Image (cartoon, rainbow, N blue to C red; front, side, top):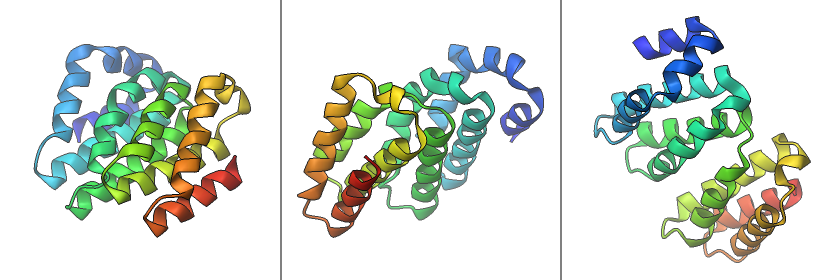
Amino acid sequence: RRCRGIVAGAGTTPLAELVWRSPFRHALAAQFADPRSSIVREACEVLTALATTTGDRFGKLAEFFVPTVLQLTYNSVAVMRDAAHGTVCAVLQASPAPRLLPTICQEGKSSRHAILRERCLSYLAIALRGWSKAAFGKGDVLDSVTECIRAGLHDASSQARVAARDAYAAL
């Protein structure tokens, strides 16, 4: 709660210096591994506040945190799962970070968990709708996105297919 207060009241300059420090990053990342849902929910709220406060400068931190938070999106505890989903959506809306897309695409294509495949496809739709076309400028990123959508269209899960069609419409 103290971190959320710092994020809300500090502004972007002192906050950026605090956030980039390794001990803070690792302490926040450790909160995502905690088995208590209230701790994970608070960590997700802090990460969401950081993303919305720092905006485009959150890209490097997003690369650090999003792979960990993605693993929580298929957790059996609903509080953790919903908090993680909201956090990834907020991060993608607040800070366009194209280096996140290969991770999201890889999970969307090859995860054993249908809910994670479906959520990754919905994250791609968020990125495709909200980010500028320049963020997808490199051929590798766009090829990875189209390959993930193509795999999602043939997914065994009906929800993943729906999310893939949504991402295709956004593309």
